[in-house]
Image (cartoon, rainbow, N blue to C red; front, side):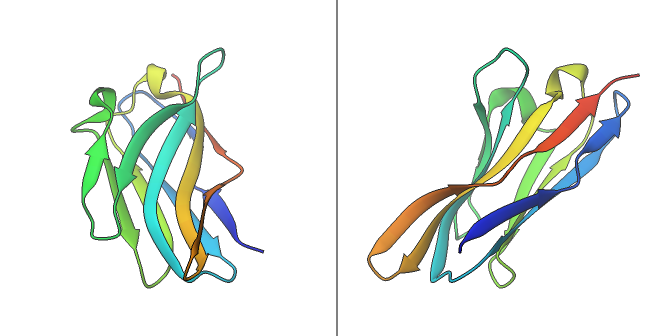
Length: 120
């Protein structure tokens, strides 16, 4: 059973920081792209950040300069460091990864989500 489990959400004041982590477990052959999405109440799920297996990153414009995505291929983890948080960053954050469970099989997996609330 392959799964992604997030941790690190919570309540933070505007301007504060949080670090989200996600660990993949199970019978994993290789992890390719890893991503963080978020979904705010009443809005569609939004891609926030992506990191390739080689460490190339990409971000949605609204978080550039504030968020940093990173991964550890040996530990099958991906993290999202969030600084200078704003109320509009409030959302459920989801970890997402393209994982191979065999040489010819790749599927996309989702974590269960972790709540981030930015409020004074």
